Image 1 (cartoon, one colour):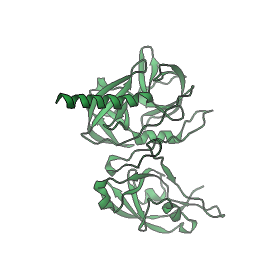
Image 2: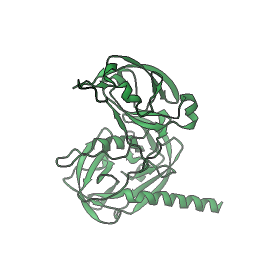
Image 3: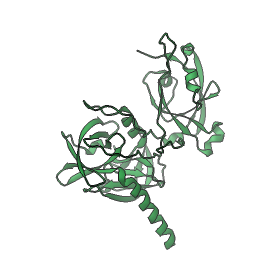
Image 4: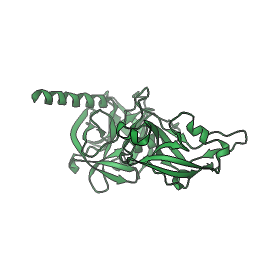
Length: 331
């Protein structure tokens, strides 16, 4: 028994240690700080509710150096804030995951000097929010480390720690973090970037991220239409998709091992009008697999504008069929 506990303890240390290079301490007041997640492009993501509005922030990096940072974007709806570092710091984005109720989680925060702190917890339940499903953590409110990294047992990022609307500690899901990073900084003089941290699938879709790219992540693919012929007309679905791998338990039901997950919808667009939701996994269009590299391009040809296609998708473990009318892209 002692050997098993020692092995478990060592595994936790290794997972948390790998995360330490992505942590920073954001100083918000004398003797007060919160944790930030350092991402590609010298960006930091943290919890919006815990970040006061300041002209400039001092950030303690994992190597102990203190650098300045400016606020680049805030999204109170997603409870996320983004900062840009004034000095370069090279780091790879983490691999991401979706938490499941009952699963163990490790919350890694940053101490005042940037060194890591650790807490073990479990995901008490999944709460529906405007951003999708958020894991509620089995922690007391006074134990929450705002902005801390919530990791699964493989060391993948489930989200960052925050206080939920019902005053329960929770993890802001990694798919919401991915959406903010994709949008990029919104301050003058800062060039937007598209980091490789991709939105994670929602637990209701029961899917896992696609096979790892070079940095362990798969970037989302915008399917807002493909370039048309010289007429300039563009077909449009009004949806952004991310390649994913369908878990073995659902592959037989889906009839295939991969698909494309819906990560965002344009309000009033064809996909939303057809009833698609964020977290759905697109399997096929008119019987043709949507996972092929040319599948969507073929269905976004100019001659399909105005036509109705059959959409096969996976939602909450069930295979559904609906119909979507391809539209002309606005603007």
